Length: 169
Image (tube, rainbow, N blue to C red; front, side, top):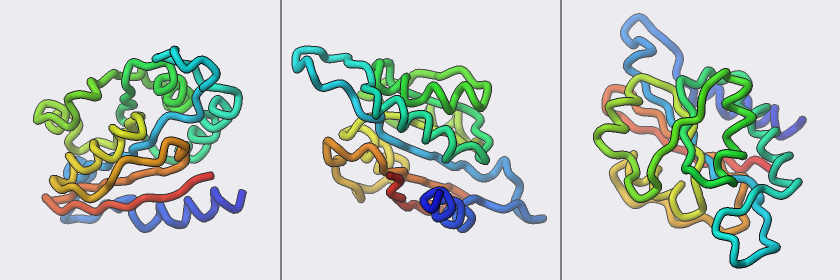
């Protein structure tokens, strides 16, 4: 519970507030996470499911995001990412949309998500790269392979970009 209060407090500083000069449609916010803990028991399995701990984390992510109104939830087409995204998508009554991890933050993606609040679920190597693509600079390195609790948040308003990383355990 303490972590949720800390997250709520931190999010209160970055979630944009509407003003007379700025409408919600001019603000784009991306929340990016890595998939939850995957089953590593079969080293040859390139598309493993989440293990029990990962399923619990996926449910916890939906609780972290319960007060955020997402317009869309994106995931790669791997079991572990869609299973991580599913509880939040279900809670928000949204279908999971897929994206190609080899083509991050294209012009088409940017245009389709402008003015929206988006959750993106990826991998240890694609999530920070996606954030870097949004920011237009190489700011973040790959995540540690056991880091399943980092939340990257990027807000774009009038061309200004604000980013931060929160650790949610």
